[in-house]
Length: 467
Ligand SMILES: Cc1cc2nc3c(=O)[nH]c(=O)nc-3n(C[C@H](O)[C@H](O)[C@H](O)COP(=O)(O)OP(=O)(O)OC[C@H]3O[C@@H](n4cnc5c(N)ncnc54)[C@H](O)[C@@H]3O)c2cc1C
Image 1 (cartoon, rainbow, N blue to C red):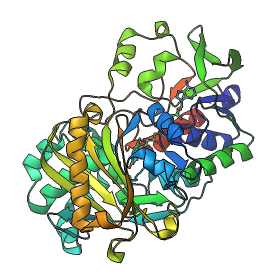
Image 2 (cartoon, rainbow, N blue to C red; image 1 turned 90 degrees about the horizontal axis):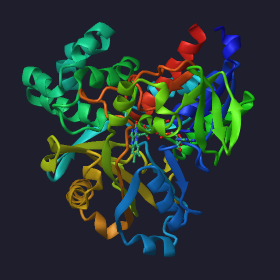
Image 3 (cartoon, rainbow, N blue to C red; image 1 turned 135 degrees about the vertical axis):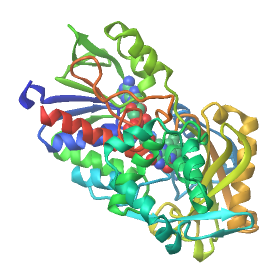
């Protein structure tokens, strides 16, 4: 097949993976059409306008993205009846690790011709009753320099060898002093998995490698929220004559003679040379007949699990100026979760006025603590995690309750599409069926979450344009 033969691309889903694929391919002259089942762009990188949001809509949309709100302060009804979210952009889905301007996301967006302004921050660490910043001091950097250089310069063959080594094993071998703390914290935040015995060293290092190489800030947040990224990608697609259909559920992927022919939307057939699926890989067989695939492939995709979290969004009347634009990690020992200890993060990158997420004189602080998908469905576990989130905010902002406007705690049991763990291997972009590809955070591509989603799009484009 030449490029000309595969000009018409149908994309299922307008998450970051689908939109990035659409922007990159339409820029290269492919004819792109995206079908998104929701009325909004962005998928799990949700941006909701607090001014128009109703409680009913909020609950409905969250439930469609594997989320609910187990707690809030005051009760949600009171928050909505008193219009307390007016002027806020409520983002769910990108807090946003490894997302600085020079990160994978930043680079792929530039490739797609999209410029999004980011607020960036570096990491600090919360310890009982206090905190320190930065997490890695100049002295640490000098001490770690040989290890960091080794990591940055390691080739893919070294990373592959490390794929089967768990971080727990790495800590046994190399984890002393501050290095131990770093190895306990960073792989957990970059994978959203607490159990160090399950995190693959190769995957965790690979996630940070390219960002370290470019010197990107550890945390980046798009100004005015995630919707800025989705809108900018959608603008690029439309500018390049691509089409995006919202509210358009793809009921079926059409396959004939083991080749992909198109999709069915609202009982109408749409024919394409290539179909790209951006939904959760576990759900692929809801819209394509299993009979076309080997049973081991079907069983593998269906068996994959994602990651979970309890998040907290705090609206505060004041924030200590020294915390502005900083992000803090914490570790809770014996937290009653898989892997025993739980890592979380509280970020003030969203509290800086330039983030544009909160109305005047309000400061939005976002946080999360990692758990497994099943823990994210257990109210009892979540109750304990909520106490940990609040306690750590209290260390940073003593007596914060006296200047809290509201707090909302969403729980998510499908944060990352497929957890990057040793026992949970992501499928490749190319499926066994000709002309059917997968993109998003559930496929085999560097990084997790948003980085994996945009990197998979870039890899697909490389694959399609190389042949
Ligand atoms: C609370 C929370 C916090 C997070 N924090 C971070 C973070 O700090 N850093 C980070 O990197 N990542 C984070 N993530 C993960 C990040 O949001 C996701 O990795 C990323 O948005 C996934 O993008 P995607 O394109 O792979 O999939 P999605 O965003 O899930 O997009 C898939 C789209 O496909 C659509 N779709 C599915 N099936 C069909 C169909 N049959 N027809 C039409 N449309 C369909 C869906 O509606 C959806 O819009 C977080 C996620 C959540 C929920």
